[in-house]
Length: 326
Image (cartoon, rainbow, N blue to C red):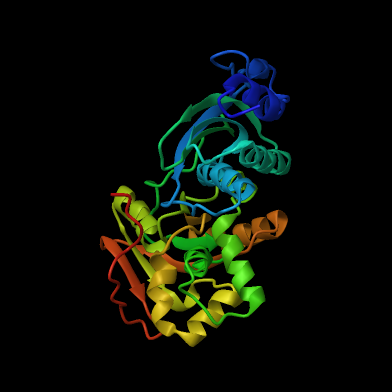
């Protein structure tokens, strides 16, 4: 069976991924039905990955699939939504054979099991290149309550989950631009770039606690700039408080000039959020409950803009704030 057999490919590799959704009809219809769920609101997001821009041509198909799904699950987590289902569109070039499709579908199946989501449908087309993949994800929140990015208050504490900068360093590893690392550090950073970890447990738990939230995809400084701009305030970050993995600390120890890259490089897919200082204890309990590390990295201020301070409280000069798509 070749890839030109569209319906056979769908039936063999993707229909099984819809088995948990009766409204998907085994992917035999042109659309799916998402049933109402009591008083829960429906949250949706859509994202795309382009070969050569968001992933490299030789990245394994299963990891490409999982990154595609996880980046969208991260968007849902940033709004406090529990993931439920997704739609998939693939524009495949002629180089993608059936073994690539099989590996891609296996990657989706692995993450469907991990994150309790199901495929509802989508579309598959041919392209002369580059390969382009798009995924729309759906999640639920109680009532109409969501986490937003424009609702931070002056004097809020700023927190981030996990560690920052691993994705940007992982891309350098993949591009052979960061050498001399121990194999353990190289493998760790490469995997962090290829396989982000969406905070799907922490995000919904922040409802009613965080004052604003988003996920860090384009760079910590740039993304916190969105919270600042949309909330009509400013952000003050402490560079020495930014949580770094052991691998990133090793890299930075060898080359301190890479600090701006860690702050602006993107591909972290961690949650950055604001919180009233008096709620710090509740957050610590929540972090233990969800098994997610969170770190206070700064505060919101009345003066607009984003300022990054060094360990001596002096502003750092950054050439840019993060990734831009155009």
